[in-house]
Picture 1 (tube, rainbow, N blue to C red):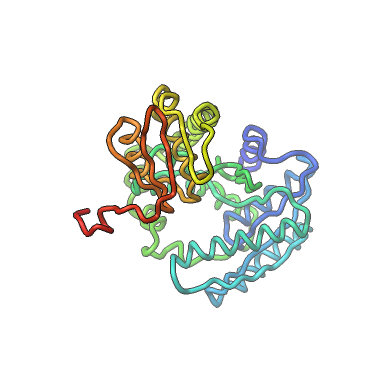
Picture 2 (spheres, rainbow, N blue to C red; picture 1 turned 120 degrees about the vertical axis):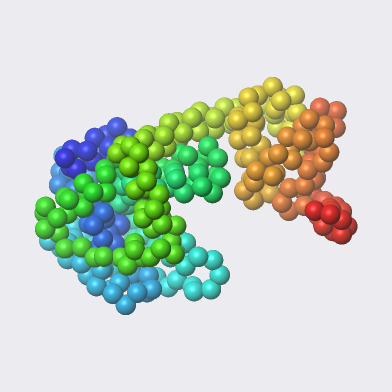
Length: 330
């Protein structure tokens, strides 16, 4: 069942191509172990070559044992394997976020070393549904509903994305694959664990197919997102005007003639290209007010946006007296 589902996912989502060399990230846990095992079975018919790698983040004493389990599985299957180690800073932002960043950096380096064009990771349909729920809770909007991309532009692919976690774990048990247990999966300090413990059971009690519906919603949102992105690219091509050095200009009429979602995506991209920072909801709302002749908008890096004679003009004015600089009310 899992093997056929993964084969169909790879074909329907165009995840891998014949002749492609694939690095499989294997933590030693059940999802990634199943991924290595299934891709090994499919490799001859898909015409792909596999390498595997496991990363020790140095955060748990038993992590070395997890890497050994991943290596033993790869050796049993005859898949070339590399054990990687990274150092994760303990100060600052979330340790898990920094561990993820360090892991992907190490895996990208390993991809380059072995000549792989794709990096397969073990996210399942359940991970997709949990991601959508978490983003909805945090108010990320329609973009957040698109969830996890089955294939990213940087070559990361997720062949298990249409498989239920329970089915993946049943596959591991059926084939007697030795796997590691990550204690963080039971640690309620993490949002994903709280969702699994509290929110997911309530949703499944209402509808056993709730997670499947959430994953389908992610697919639908991603398709709409791509449509909006394409239209936003065309809009920016029409709207960007010639400007002097240190200035950026947009055709306000072209922007206002576009549907609101397309305009928002185009403005978000313009902000990112102009300032190097991601656009927030407040930035986009400020630009909307400016487009409708209601004041000025200050963007990251001191870029001040004004509307003048049907032209949106942005200049870098880091000393512009905002309310906080004047000591006025926020």
